[in-house]
Amino acid sequence: MTQRQAEDDHPPSSAEMFTRAVALLTAQGDLRVWSVIISVFGDLALERNDVITGTLLTRLTTLMGLKPEAVRVALFRLRKDGWITSHKTGRSSAYRLTDMGFGETQAARARIYAPSLPEPESWQLLVSRPMVQAARAQDEKTLQEQGFHVVGPGIYLGAGDLSAGDEFLAIDGQITRLPDWLRVSVPPDGLEQGFADLCTRLRDLGALLDGGAPKLDATERATLRVLIVHHWRRLLLRQPNLPDRFFPDGWPGVACRGRVMALLARLERPALGELQETPG
Amino acid sequence: MTQRQAEDDHPPSSAEMFTRAVALLTAQGDLRVWSVIISVFGDLALERNDVITGTLLTRLTTLMGLKPEAVRVALFRLRKDGWITSHKTGRSSAYRLTDMGFGETQAARARIYAPSLPEPESWQLLVSRPMVQAARAQDEKTLQEQGFHVVGPGIYLGAGDLSAGDEFLAIDGQITRLPDWLRVSVPPDGLEQGFADLCTRLRDLGALLDGGAPKLDATERATLRVLIVHHWRRLLLRQPNLPDRFFPDGWPGVACRGRVMALLARLERPALGELQETPG
Image: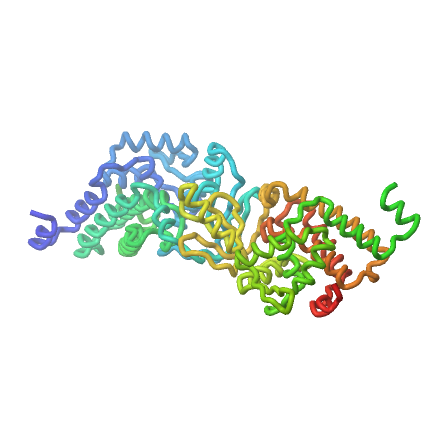
């Protein structure tokens, strides 16, 4: 019996629906715990000094099916890598992003929650001097971190307001022709399938919620939101930060973005205070 | 005894001065006769239907030290290659540029006589799809003919109003950084020495004319003009059509241009009618 038939027969209870929703978003069993925890902070800790209690973290990750021991290891690693700090409050711990951690999540949020990718006012194309491949690889790494896309060997495209070194030929202006060969080359290998899979899961999730999303409580909404943001973020941040027209026709990342935005709007973000006060 | 000392001792007669001037401009003995004849048309036949008589051509080329037999061969070749047509007028011949010939000289004149190279209102940078070298060489040839400069493999820079195929990534705008490595790479090999040599010859010619340029007759002025334009054109059209700031610091083409313009202003262009009426 398929899930859709089951829904037709007797609408699921709120608890059943939540369980099925989590199953849809964890079916691939590929959650990296430390990365999920960053997604928790990214979606819920919006202010610089927001604190997330160990109690809340345990509650959310348990609902996602993650093991407490794996969460403890991940928290240790995140502290060690400078993403979070912790302090004791009575018998339990509380966690907060470091300056670095907050900066990274803040920067990523601009991409993750953007309902569309606006065209920058101007573009710049950089051309490097001829150089050996090893030196070029270093340039590519640096410029990609700054937000440039590698169009070809020694050729970099970025928004007009990005700054880059003096050693490049630079032209600032408008992209007047965007050929198919370039659009096809923009997404890295493997990303199309990833977006297509997520798109399917989000479509199924939307159908599931059509029954009774409003009945979900704050913790349940937070759990689903974090899982959606997590999967979306993992794929999105692997693709170049370019507007939709730079991608091949029918690029599934576009449909995926629409579904993410619709689901997040539907699963209203609970305030952190509300979540922390909920008994564990 | 140097030339300068000779001038100090007794100023040369007009005829002596002309002979020395021609010697300065033909000292390298590298005149290609057919190319000199194109320079004659280019400097003197400004209107579409201007005719140059065989008599005038013979007179000018003889003054340059070219052999009548070489001129006959060159005229034959220019007719065969579609540059000029000829018709008989009485016992002598008259020559006229074809549409192709006039188009080519007209296009070259825009560069040859420009007192400076203005910056275009906008630039465009084209990036080609990755391709094998043979295909790229074809692209380079086509685009260079259209006025683009090859910045690197598959990267072409041109004025914003040039048109090029749809298959390139194109960005239109302003050049905001022009690094030294590019400027050094712009001139083709060997051109710097050629410009430097011409610059020296033009400096010496200027010094020579300081005495008595106004005394030169129309034929003499035409002869010197054609030789100056000829040498200048042969070098200039080998360098990319880019403003001075794209060339290395101290690029001798810049000083050369100034001297060419000053000398042409001084050696006023005689009207073609005046030249043809002069007894041979």
